[in-house]
Length: 106
Image 1 (cartoon, rainbow, N blue to C red):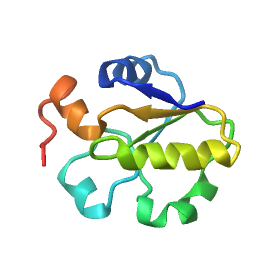
Image 2 (image 1 turned 180 degrees about the vertical axis):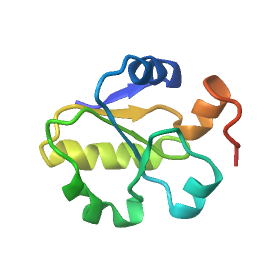
Image 3 (image 1 turned 90 degrees about the vertical axis):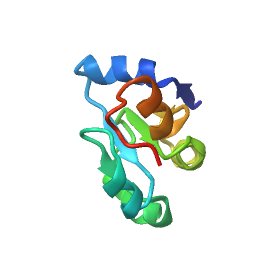
């Protein structure tokens, strides 16, 4: 099952110090405009190449611009046997609106 959590909920998880893989599935040009600190870029267009870098036991939070591409990746991961996958509801846009307004909106 995929959790679809708000930016504020994700922020609490990240602030807890729990070991998390924060995966950004946007394209390189988007990542250069705006990103969440400590995120790893694994673009959707090349995600299958990157999926091997993830461990099925990892707690994984996935985000994109508005939450659509990240949900696709979450579904892919769950279907591949990953058990702890979370989608950032509203993507980096919502993160910028609700958590960190220093992140540019595009």
